[in-house]
Image 1 (cartoon, rainbow, N blue to C red):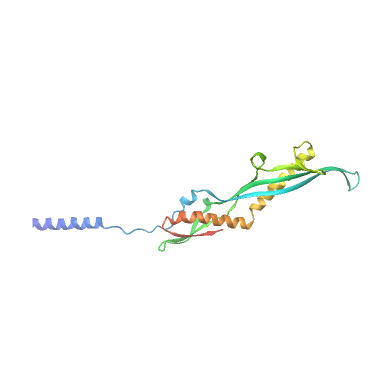
Image 2 (spheres, rainbow, N blue to C red; image 1 turned 135 degrees about the vertical axis):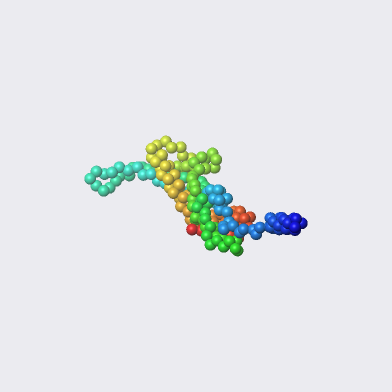
Length: 202
């Protein structure tokens, strides 16, 4: 009887050991990890160099009392060689997965549309930045502001240049290029998870 009990006990231990050693079936995750993508923050994917020639005229006038007319007795013309750059990128903090199929390990990574992160003129001519010239009857010459009219003309030319660089960087073709650059960076990053991920934009 004792031998039978020992035999049954050994059989039970052997069965328990076999069950413990049996590899568990791999659990398919519900979705690929998105945290690693979001931790990248804002992904700058496109740098655009800007250059343009802007002419601005600041008129010096005097209103004629009790009329709608004005008397022009001078003015300042300035030429701005505007140079600058802008960065376009995508906010990955807003990234999320949709159309998730765990069995097939496929998903769609939805990203917000790219936008201009920074757009600025380079105001330092010593580093190849923007520079001013005065325009007169003798041609053009480097401008060092010496009058209130010249200062106003320079400031307004800079304002126009800033508006133009922002508009240039917001063109649709720039946004398309930024999307393609982001996809080229993100596709390899998400493919290492073993999931087949496509990218959609909103």
